[in-house]
Figure 1: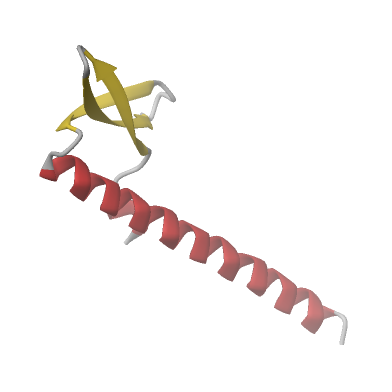
Figure 2: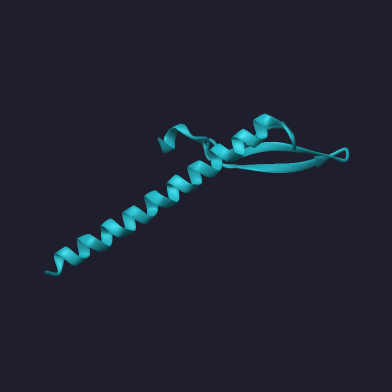
Amino acid sequence: KIGELPKGSVQLKKRAHQNFCYQVFRDENRKLKWVYLGNESSQKAAEMQKLIAKRIELEEKQKQMQRDLSQISRMLAHQ
């Protein structure tokens, strides 16, 4: 499920006294990519921000589960 969510973050750039949103992420070649999402108040930018926040939340949960599993494995090994 994590792999289906977008990577990166949403960044604002100010151009001509307006703020524009971009999705920023690294591609498979590790190059930084900027994808235009629209102005600051656009629906697309808000939705992308929610999806990226969900991915970050799931990645944090996955990391915590891996730490817990590692700790349990160490505890079982010392019995």
